[in-house]
Length: 241
Image (cartoon, rainbow, N blue to C red):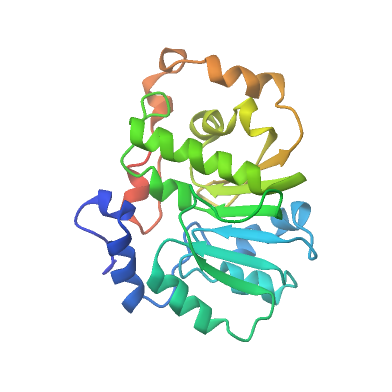
């Protein structure tokens, strides 16, 4: 709890993360790899080329490497994070580390079989309260990021998004024909449920997901828009996306 900021908006500031990564060794949002390994194994092959977005100081990349996933490119916009994690995993050939903004990925088109993020988008959307009334800045950043993710995926590639946010609120952000992918939802956790969304490049949205673009807030009860959380990070209690 020593690393919690005074204001949740600091989760969007690179200076906050650079400072935090100076003293914090590791932190895993939404649980570690063993919690959802059974789900990833259904959609990620050992030989896949993987892009890890907002890698932070999580043990996820290292744990996946130990499990046999040896082609992982990690990106984070914190220079301190990339410096630290690159040194920590210097003995892992095939694991690379890049300081990069996820809305401006510098990889060529169709570079990866899998793009994976765990709570990165949750942190980016920390100040938003509704998927129907996002700020122009957040909406633009999210659209650019999802467009970049789609661009970097190979045909048949998967974008795997791990979050605490329910389908009612999160699927609408992914359900866009422009991204050229289908959506499937899975979950894990005991006592509190976390969600894994798998978007497959080149597959069409199902009818229900395609219709999400037309729904409005009045289609749901106010209570539907509240998300409970038991995570240690306080900001997760305040994000409704």
